[in-house]
Image (tube, rainbow, N blue to C red; front, side, top):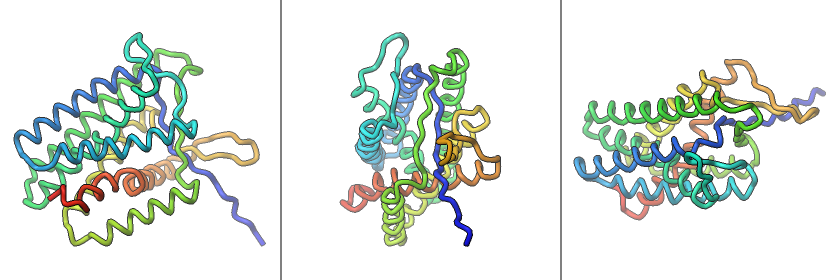
Length: 253
């Protein structure tokens, strides 16, 4: 009887210790966009912003406690305290996708194609800035100073079960059309981020050899499928509650 080996798959992001400066600029960009959208269009942009910040804050704390967030982060020449680093990431990495996704989902019900296009343009602009900043920073430092952040995509099992449960909740409230639009918009936004970062070697998939404990990159076909899977997995596991919780309380239309 042939036993199929279990393969650990990881979503990997490559950054530098000087990532904090670019993150600060992205934070100001996201705050400005959220303020502008709320002022011009009304709606619940600040609610989705702070909901995604709070949820992502728990994620970042978990990554730090588990040891997955390692290394030092600098903004210019100043090292950020770990608490500030965690808060900064939470205020950027969640809302960077949640706010445009909410804009797209809100415009879909009209439909207002110009606002839908604007939502994706904002994602592309933020992703390009992040990719170019990280690429330039990484090329200026030696290999040993580069920061690899790995997140297991199929382990532990409990995390996958949580993602499935979140997906079931999304299906349960499928009659609320904006929920599906938000879900698809967020997954598409993450995939755009991956597509922009992948050619520069900043975001990719790795497998782990259980015999040697070494990490290696699979072929481009599996890379593509892995990044598509990860965009959906990340949406259901990490970001769906940022929409579901305020919606369940009636805070989102």
